[in-house]
Amino acid sequence: MNSEARSELVAACGLYCGECHRYKKGKCPGCAGNVKATWCKVRTCTAERGYRTCAECTEFPDVQACRKLNNIFSKFFALVFKSDRKASLQLISAVGVEEYAREMTRRGLSVVKRR
Image (cartoon, rainbow, N blue to C red; front, side, top):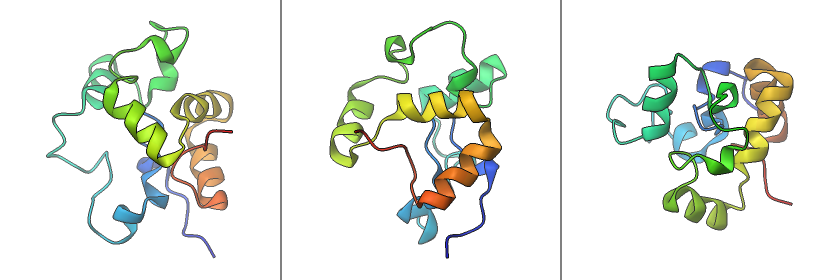
């Protein structure tokens, strides 16, 4: 049985911390609760604009154009973990943060996987 879905564990970039192994093991407080993660430009950007996630951003019609979200670290993360944050953000746009958290919990995933 999967854990209970918690929308507050959806990170600004589309990751769902509720299904992350580091979060589940207590090694990470999750993106929203990590006060030490001042290095995260995505979180800073969404907070400055009053957004919950990048899915709300209107500055970039395609999130791939955003250099804060689509940087060398995210490309490496996507390669290693076969993740697709663009698809995650599109799903958030389509169904909302709460339903996204439920869907990721149901699937047992922290991010939509690349096809």
